[in-house]
Length: 124
Image 1 (cartoon, helix red, strand yellow):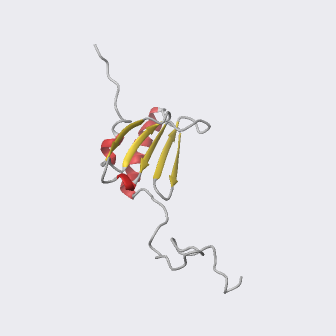
Image 2 (spheres, rainbow, N blue to C red; image 1 turned 180 degrees about the horizontal axis):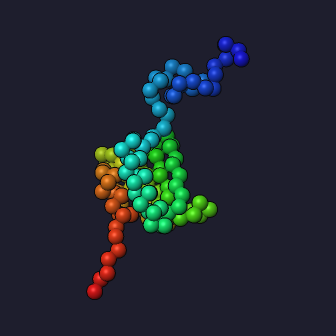
């Protein structure tokens, strides 16, 4: 390998096109450990009930997406999105159904996730 040419691999945030970028700066949005704990706790409960079977996590530049599937060959049942640009407006968290309908939006992930964790009850 030539010492003059920049490497494609290096510390997070540093790229060959921008080697001066700070090492701690991440070029994408991600979920924190607490957010992932809340997401996986709901996911585990739904897997135990037999409703969900697979998930995927996407870290994009402008948002992070946690998608859940009934079967991995189908479209996502729900997308739980974190969009930091909306933090001061409607809230950073939203749940989007497979049809594109936004079920809930808010500032607190726990309150937003309650939409998916509702228990059915008998109405007389």
